[in-house]
Image 1 (tube, one colour):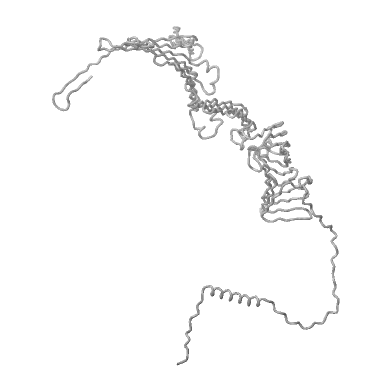
Image 2 (tube, rainbow, N blue to C red; image 1 turned 180 degrees about the vertical axis):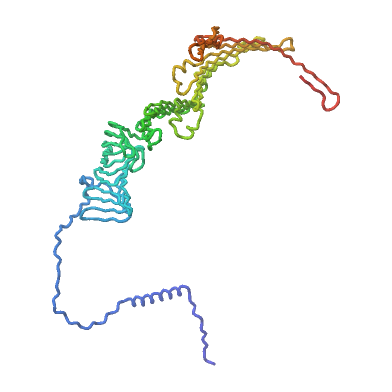
Length: 607
């Protein structure tokens, strides 16, 4: 062991920097191997191949005969480029549910099943539409189903125009078209025409759309073949303005009637406007026959007042004429007035005659804020000639047995006065008796103190308590039947007069314990028609001739029927009737008192 040296191995110390360096070196080595692996390998040498001795053929395409398009300058001003006047200005949109067929040779597009074409504000819907790009014409028509019925009819909409047809042609460039079997609606009225020509205004604001109809019928019936209407050979319609027709004939159920119009001029303005009123349907009854009700003219004089004049015409000759007016003023009043006159044609044993009748209906109501002192309102329902049962067929009109009216007017003044007028009427439709009270005037005052001082001072005098009250009434009474109401006899038989009534009273104390209440009443009635009765003592004797058996002799037998009679002499003139009444009342009050010494009840007092 001597001479030898021992070596001690010490551990190698590494730092963080050494570890980082080792990691970087390792990454670089791996990257190098990866790059070497991506280098392409050299291909193996191919064996030698003999060269082909046949020369290759080369094909060279001939040059294009069309000239190459010249490049478009980038600085061109497209706003100055002139377009063809026949060019389509806006997009034409078209759709179809089933299919579309394009024909490039004919420049057409065929649309099938629920097809629709839109251009600007125009729209056409139909089951079959053909668009011709060369002529800018569209052809639209419906298609027959398996039952042979025409479905999917063309429906045309342009602006305010809306109509349906069986077939139509339309030029969307010139806004002109031809419509077959068109059904148009103009302000609540249907116009059914065999052939029509439509000329649109287009973009020209100085022109309007015009429709020319041939063999068309005006009607309010919504069916494709109206039950009734006014048929004319030529018509010109300017939508929302006017319709002009030539000679026209009233047609019912496809059968012409003898009623003709030489021409017609019908305004078609939007809103309330003057124009023709036409019935919704025809009527029939065994009494009147076939007829139309409500043919007439409407007059909107203002927003607060209108008038409708209509007539009912029947094939058996009966006629009714109506005037109906509505009026209204906001916060003031509103009402309705209806006048009707009827001529019922009847035939008895081959002789025809007309039975006239009339109806007056008026309803008026006043707003409570209209006037502080004046009020007017009520209703009037007056008829003559049994109008209701003769002309109305509803259950209420036939079962109603009484008609009543009441219209009143009242005026109150600042002073203690009150004036009123009244119209009342009662009518029985079974007995046909009519009773009318008109005019009935009434004037009355409130309680007046004529001797009372305006500026009272000191103790009130006894005469200051005198009070007065006055009232007067004017009454007219008419009794008649509904057939003789507006005749001279009804006026001659009228009963009328004036009644006055004046009352006064007062009250004062006498001898401290008595109350004296005198009163007086004065009544006076003015009669303008009186009956003077006189007695004629001349007896009334009746004679009878009695023959014997062989009629050769006779005897006169006298019989006294009466010993005189009362003769009524009707006289006209003022005849007053007066009545006085005076009275006085005295009253007093006696009081008694009873006191109790015991109990809860200490006393009683009685008068």
